[in-house]
Length: 324
Ligand SMILES: *[C@@H]1O[C@H](CO)[C@@H](O)[C@H](O)[C@H]1NC(C)=O
Ligand SMILES: *[C@@H]1O[C@H](CO)[C@@H](O)[C@H](O)[C@H]1NC(C)=O
Ligand SMILES: *[C@@H]1O[C@H](CO)[C@@H](O)[C@H](O)[C@H]1NC(C)=O
Ligand SMILES: *[C@@H]1O[C@H](CO)[C@@H](O)[C@H](O)[C@H]1NC(C)=O
Ligand SMILES: [Zn+2]
Image 1: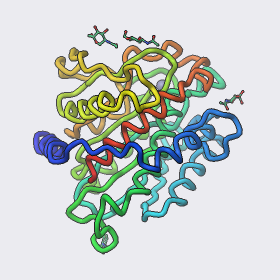
Image 2: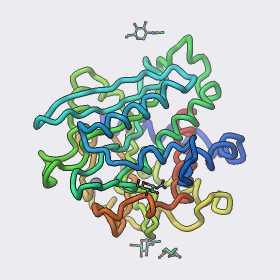
Image 3: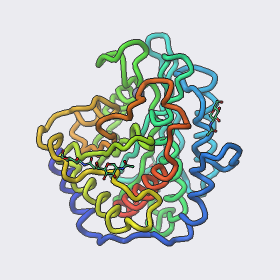
């Protein structure tokens, strides 16, 4: 299964040449508004995350409803699945959005929307508010080009074709101290549900965003051989459009190969249960982590808007390339 999936991803990437959408009206019209850090920008997909999002809390419920409404307002026929469960007396909710409900395989994009319980007031701007806003942006992008990438979507429901699943995990953070048991509640729950209903077999690759958009000068290396093609694709897009992208410096580091060569997990995160099923994972998390990781300084004043925009564009291009 592992090698088959890797082969599928590889073929998908080789078949298409680099077809960039830069200059398309979409980015011009939307980037400034949708990923704005300017207080009061009503259309910002980022500002609503400027709040604590502790599992089971009122502010978490508000955020969930913001995310759901975003997908409800899109034009395509997104399947909306809030998946609630209770563990350790805490009510968690993963949010899963699917385009192409009868597709035979899926690209999965994910980030966690919950925030750490302590320190009290912790916002988690890079952990992972920015990543969630990027996912919302990608959903809008895919929605806007839906006709282009899925001829006959309505008749075929993407049967025999690729679909997209965008997942917002709850309960990534430990409730107390990080252990395999006390962490990634949402990811473990979803992977086990998907094992039971067969969905797990259809996940061709997972792209996990975490700790993105910080002001710190940190880069994301390639972590896994199975996803290195996708990683290189991102790096190519970045390099070939260096002058057009809002953030000019490095976001990736293609010469950092030690994590990939070690063939093991260095950073524990929501991908673990999916990785264990053999799903190729593109883990987009910088190393080292931002210097204010898990402190109250991980707030919106430490976000870099141009970085967030650049990640959004790069990932839109990657998704377009895979789904096209
Ligand atoms: C985020 O929220 C804090 C506290 O409410 C506020 O002081 C700050 O201005 C907000 N940041 C942005 C970018 O809106
Ligand atoms: C999609 O799948 C559902 C449930 O498996 C089925 O009821 C429906 O007819 C399918 N739709 C198409 C267009 O194949
Ligand atoms: C970030 O680090 C890279 C490599 O060390 C360097 O080329 C770049 O100029 C740095 N950027 C900033 C803003 O410090
Ligand atoms: C990339 O990784 C290499 C190898 O570890 C390192 O020497 C270099 O400083 C890194 N560059 C950036 C921009 O982080
Ligand atoms: Zn965290």
